[in-house]
Amino acid sequence: MSSRQWLFVCSCMALITSAFTFSIRGDILQEMGNYFGLSQQQRGGIGGGAFLGMAVSMLGGGFICDFLGMKRIMFLALFSHLAGSLGMIHAPHLDSTQNTYYWLYAASFLQGCGNGFTEVAINPLIATLYADKKTHYLNILHAWWPGGLIIGGLSAQFLVRPFFSGGLMGLQLWQVSMYMIVIPAVIYGAMLLPSAFPKTERVASGVSTGEMLMACVRPMFVLWAFCMLLTAATELGPQQWQNSVMQSTAGVSGTLILVYTSGMMFVLRHFAGPIAHRLSPVGMLCGSSILAGVGLYLLSFANSGATAFGYATIFGLGIAYFWPTMLGVTAERFAKGGALALALMGSVGNLSISQVLPAMGGIVDRYAVERVDDAAPEQATQFVQTNDAGKQFLDMDAVNKYAVTYLTEHYPDQAAKFIEKNSAGEPVSVRARELAKFNAETPESQRLVIPGFEAAMSAQRTGFSMAFRWVSILPTVLVVIFGAIALWDRSRGGYKPEILISPEEEAELMSGGVQGAVE
Image 1 (cartoon, rainbow, N blue to C red):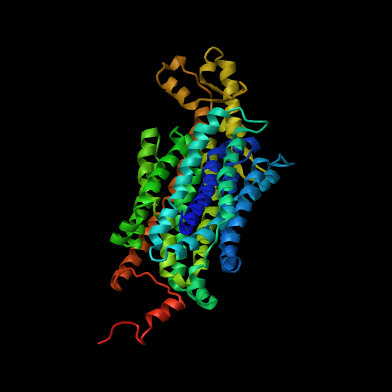
Image 2: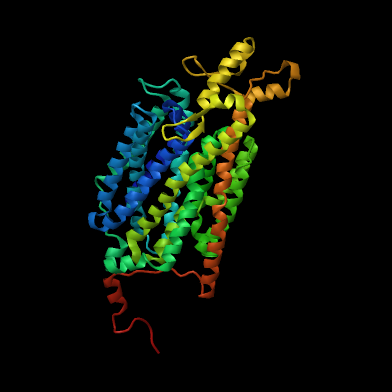
């Protein structure tokens, strides 16, 4: 394996680690939240902490990457990945829910720093190694983001859950799942040790720091950064919430849907080069925005496995090229910005996600509380709780305990068929969909009615659906912006990448006293 191939594989493995933090955190979000008694907004906040950490580390890392070198930045990523994951796994029950939330938020922030430092190093590394085909190879590199989501998601669903449902050595199931992140982290850490990293393209080409800074304040760069705010929120906000939403609204595993759409993205990103050549990267992003908006809006209405996977197909096609193509265009149109331009773009994207995740959780809480107050006012006082931050939320743990107790007391002969138990044999919830199906097929006099339970479940589904519906507005804005940029490019002769050359290459071109053939 050549040095270039070794560095490419090492970069892919680091990105797989980042993807593990995303898919596994999404898979265990509800279990971890129930374990610590968190609201949906707090659960979204923990996910948002990872992306804020990513934004901060990319912002800071972009300024120091050329000074420290990409290899040292990668070691910072390794430390952050391990420290953040272990901190979340071993989070204690502190004196208040809010303080426990702060601990989990800090651990998630550190995980995000690992993801951010990874991007700070690998994006300019690949842009340097493949300077003539940046968009194409950045898409292939970032195919391993969905690749990691697939590996992490399948591992969580079919390796950890079946074999460690009762936990391991005193750890809960969600903690065992989180330990999976350590495996790829150790692999890329071992690969780093013998690796020799090149200088970044910007440094090798002799572009000054002043020129780098000027490239990052151009009006077009600022507009492109605004687009990154919207593309990142559209892609990764719903994906982080996908397991929670799909379990509630469609009764299917959102993690498996994430694996499915990630498989699509993994394949599609390997063919980004020919598509970008045919449509231009900006035209490709415009089409992607249309599909993403339609798919996400339809997903908010999914109510079965068939509709969930069908609508997720449209959404997956839409978001497949968002992140790597945004970075590819940044590297090609703002080449003098170097590692800083790529880091700033990634930082902006992650800052957006850090805010949209708790905002989506807040939407879930708001609509769920409003709906249950209207539909089941007598039970709402028991179901709706107020957290330490003064925010109301629908406490599904309280709903399930109430439903189990009511069903056991009023329908003792039939309760066992509809009660879900944990590995210790303790009743934890009522199978809402099975109960609803039974009641739909049973004469009214024989139905098992739990006052307020169906209203609470419906309220939760409404909250999750509305979170997706609100985010689907963002790609509509992107269609307008990307369409305008594509038309502007066409009026100027088409999409034109900026190519940097080193002083030695420039001298070679100028040999003989001319830069090209003359008449």
